[in-house]
Structure formats: C-alpha cells, structure tokens
Length: 169
Image 1 (tube, rainbow, N blue to C red):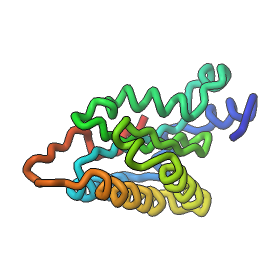
Image 2 (image 1 turned 135 degrees about the vertical axis):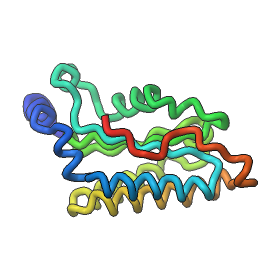
Image 3 (image 1 turned 30 degrees about the horizontal axis):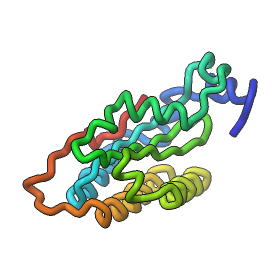
Image 4 (image 1 turned 60 degrees about the horizontal axis):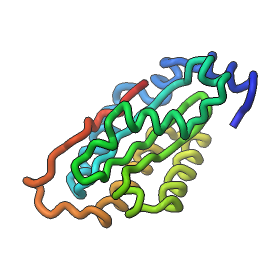
C-alpha cells in the first residue's frame, strides 16, 4: 500500500467514476443477483461495499483500509444479524485494498486463512483487469463456505436481513 503523499494523491484522483468504470450498473445487478442466489443456500448474510476513496484528511491521518472496513461494517449494520453471521466484503479502490469483516459466528466458522485467500484471489482478478468476475468468484467462494458453516434448514425460516445490492460509498 502506498504511504504519505502518494497515497493522498491516489485518493484525491479516485472518485465515483472509477467505481462506475469497474462496476457499471449491469455488473452491479449481476453481483446483487449472485449474493441473492448464494444466500438461498445458507443462513448467513453477505454485504458488499465498494468505496472509491477516503477524504484526504482521513488518508493524511493514516486511516487504514481495515479501519475503514470496520467502520463500514458498523455503518451498514452488518453486525446486526440475528445469528451474528453477517459478512462484509469491502473494496477500497484508491488503495487497491480488499477486506473481509465477519461477525463473531461467521469469523469463527470461516477462519482468517480462508478469508485472506478469498481477498488474495480477488486482488489477483482486479490486477488482471477482471473486477466483475473476480468479485463474482469471491462471492461464490464465500457462499460455498457459508453454506457449509450455516446450512439453510428451511427456506421459509430464512429472512434476508441485509440488502443484496452492493453499497457504493
């Protein structure tokens, strides 16, 4: 990750248009559908958040992507699922950073190594110029792990507690 002035410049230069170039409306609809389809196979909740950049003063103060992901986890109320099994997949475009923040049950079930591997694969896809497919693959991998950890006992008992549409911040 860049540091100092180069990081501030990267954040100043990155705006919502960068996110829209990576994820146009059609891609966001397909990502939303992948989250919805996957959640039909498990009792957990996935939330996607994509942020172009941080305000320059936050970058200058040294706010790290992980810190921001934890804030977003709270702001989007991913922590507020009934079974404490919500999961946030956060992308900070200006830093080329990917973070997964999972609530207690999801974090214990998946483990840090598995979540780190999903982030690494998504990072490779982003660097290779395949943001949509990389994100769809990450969602598929997370859905697979969550289906093993939180099998859906009855479709009628499951409620969609979080929006499936990616949050563009």
